[in-house]
Image 1 (tube, rainbow, N blue to C red):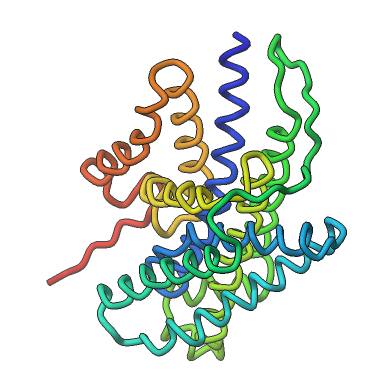
Image 2 (cartoon, rainbow, N blue to C red):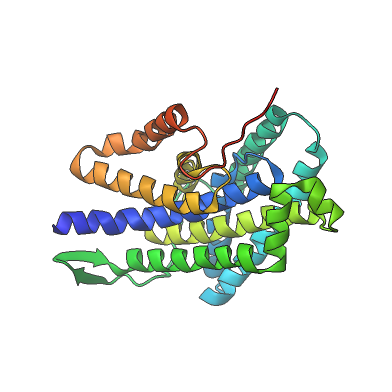
Length: 290
């Protein structure tokens, strides 16, 4: 029983972080139609931005978070303005190759400024443990679930209640109709990239705190693809469900079967869901008449 509870807590924590990272991917796809292969690198850059503010500049945690959010927002807007906006009207494969190049560029910049070795960072979340149902669970894992849940709820409220969130949903549904209603599509595109960078920053900070500040953060970000394919490329609720499913599957397979199998299992799920339900669990089915 204690093993099950531990694996459950670890899986939910991993799943919550994956949901945050995948949220940015879905935001970009819904608003702009771009499949962003650099989302894992956004997570990596976000973690290193927080490290710079918290460790190098020695800012208090709250100020470091604010600084990281500001930098992430600027990076997201610059990427949209300078790299993606000139690609409007180009073929889908051209835009995909641009995002792949962006991922390599971001990773190279991180390696150039910070090197390839792991960085030491003081713990942000407490390192104590609590007893629950006969198991000893690290408190930071539970706090990761709580923080990610609050952020996901905040994003959901933003999309459903705020004027900017409604504008983003309108652009996602029909860009031409949104333009006729006076909504700036270009501003929404920039906002989508900025919010994607912010969600990746939060995910990167949480992941770095429970693991390490190193290059492997980008590899963890690759799990975004099984998450969004499982939940649905254009579904925000699907990212939450998909993230939790992938996180739990990885932990339970690693704990009860084989750790090696847990690394490839998400991609096996990706292939199976594409074969059985290509639009994902919550994705919108599109039927095109020819």
